[in-house]
Amino acid sequence: QRQQRIRNFSIVAHIDHGKSTLADRILELTDTVSKREMKDQLLDSMDLERERGITIKLNAVELHYRADDGQIYIFHLIDTPGHVDFSYEVSRSLAACEGAILVVDAAQGVEAQTVANVYLAIDDDLEIIPVINKIDLPSAQPEVVRQQIEDVIGIDAAGAVLASAKKGIGIKEILERIVHQVPAPDGDLEAPLKALIFDSIYDDYRGVVLSIRVVDGVVKPGDRIRLMNSQTEYEVTEVGVNSPKPLQRDYLMAGDVGYLTASIKDIKDTRVGDTVTSAVNPAANPLKGYREMNPMVFAGLYPTDNAKYNDLREALEKLKLNDAALEFEPETSQALGFGFRCGFLGLLHMDVVQERLEREFNMNLITTAPTVTYDVELAEGAHLKVANPSEMPDAARIKQINEPFVKATIMVPNDYVGAVMELCQRKRGKFITMNYLDDYRVNVIYQIPLAEIIYDFFDKLKSNTRGYASLDYELSASQPSDLVKIDILLNGEKIDALSFITHRQNAQQRGREITARLKAIIPRQNFEIPIQAAIGAKIIARTNIKAYRKDVTARIHTGDPDRRAKLLEKQKRGKKRMKAVGKVIVPQEAFMAVLKTD
Ligand code: GDP
Ligand code: MG
Image 1 (spheres, rainbow, N blue to C red):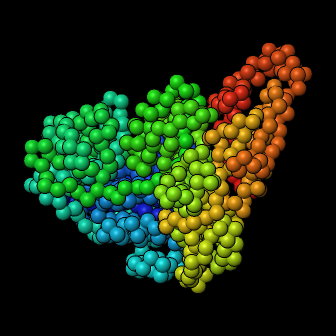
Image 2 (tube, rainbow, N blue to C red):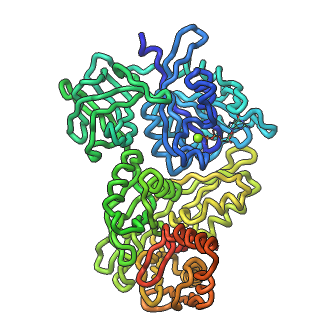
Image 3 (cartoon, protein in one colour):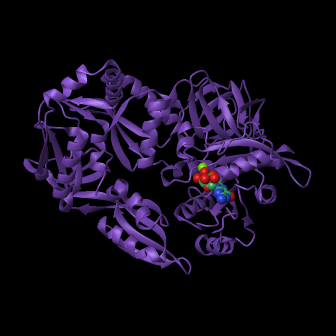
């Protein structure tokens, strides 16, 4: 029976431990991709993923594997991202699987997202197959890592596969393990259709393409389906699998992972986590779905050209189909005009969204500095959520500001514990506890303001520990902090999009740093521009951008034609991501200036 030969599994790991490379080897060994078409990290199909060398999106492919028992098995492999910002992709992938390959780097050992991701899999009752990868490295310590997996994660690693995804060692063994250890799906073929939507993407021709895991029943072209949450009905036009190119199929049945199209043009009808059922013979209850994601950081996104506002809205709606964690709502800024306040899971997520909007939707954007959501208790007792610093009420109206904290778990070799604690302390962290994972590795736990984490905490953590520390964090309760809003004035005018919130202790210094940085970023113009930082009416820092001298421009304008063309070209490129704010031309970097701390 076909269902008995299906195996659905994910690959989970800390970033860079070799998931995508292992997926490559599996694609090769199963002849899913020909030698000629093979390239490194093949499943990272987005340009952005290839350039950055990271997986951003989950990716589901079907493979066929002839096992040692002579049978041909149907594998659905879902590669997942490792970065903490994309753990939502991981949890959705896992819900479509019965098993997970846990990849651990033999030289790096268990790291923060190894633990976070494998626990997601354990919570979903998945069968875990531990793989110790990169055993070809001279610094590999497979036996130490085996012990770590047992001590830190608490699963049996005696039978962990020793592998090198790079050299192709241990791959066959992994595939045999999948056959024998991962259970076949147990869905009921006769029951009414139930399929979980775990991803989607918008296609201009076919409408919304749904990635689904069929749990019960069968679905085929011509069937009337219903999306249970949105209560809308469609006729299926196509079903198929990615292998990794899309392959049309006659049907998908219980246990299958594939795609479905139904000329769904109204984007709002589809949501990941929704259940697809039959309109004729509907299931009684929807599947469990996913827990809603709460964005952690917020920023304003504005088109550099105000006329593109509607295009941006449409682009955000389409991107949201493929990025369920993205949230947005309209906002206006005096300085930047009409745009959207967008919510992200972290800075990398924000960066990826901005880049995808620019590349896939041809948008040209200004992004304001990311901020967290503050809970502001007003003097009269009411609470206000503030996710945009310019909306912070006047100090006189505020009784108390509560800021979000995270519980940060930092795994680090014990030589660097001091450095980590010093950093956490400097970032207003509150020490919670610390425990030894084994003889030389420590888990350090702190409560740290989320705002400090999103600035440059991760970079600092890496540089202070020579790259050895890894970080995982989850939101915990908000706590009162002594915070103030700093406004920035350009040419005497308050620029709402540059306002930011900081701890009172750091206000003076941040004010000085930021005015200095803005001075360096904003190009000279033909008049002098005062830059000021203020708390309420009180100026706490100031500097000036001098007007450019006449003779400098004269030289530019009388230069030889070649040089002049080059300069014009440069100017044109420079105009991209520039915005006239009042009389002053402000480049994109200015809005991010508050992000960096020295
Ligand atoms: P992912 O972030 O988990 O998907 O990791 P990648 O598959 O992108 O691999 C990260 C880096 O580790 C790449 O430079 C790979 O070439 C390298 N890598 C992956 N597997 C091995 C291995 O078995 N041995 C060695 N030496 N390098 C590997
Ligand atoms: Mg990857």
